[in-house]
Length: 210
Image (tube, rainbow, N blue to C red; front, side, top):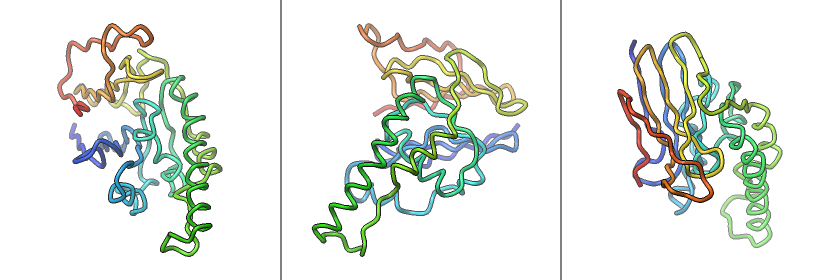
């Protein structure tokens, strides 16, 4: 079975994580992060989506940090209609982080309009708190260690990453080929986080190495 992997973010920078897998007649996005930091990076959030959201069948999140989840409200607003799979703690954290992100985008736009420093008239938020709430309706929680089949010969499992609450590595199985997405990894020996899983075999590894 042929598999295509396209890097749509976190290349040349540490934010905007998005990995597009095309296999088994499906398109799956691993993470859907917002670009943060320097202005030239933030401006990339305003560009047309790097893939047509309506053509993507599912999104699988490694964890809730905005550089991995924060583009979801805009992705849904632009036409994504599939499910967003994540661990239960990631779902719960996204309820807080995404709505807060939408609120902050609205406040930033209000501030720009009040003080007149935006070249846009009026300045608009990238997305709103209501957009974020709508995106949360697409979430579906999957427990650690449970093999979830997206399609025949296309399945994934979440493994503990030890980064933040609910953070996971994604072990993707495509027609017998295993692809491991590390997400952000925590350290071993933490007093507050579970140990990152030990993975003994994968055909390919996509590692966040910053």
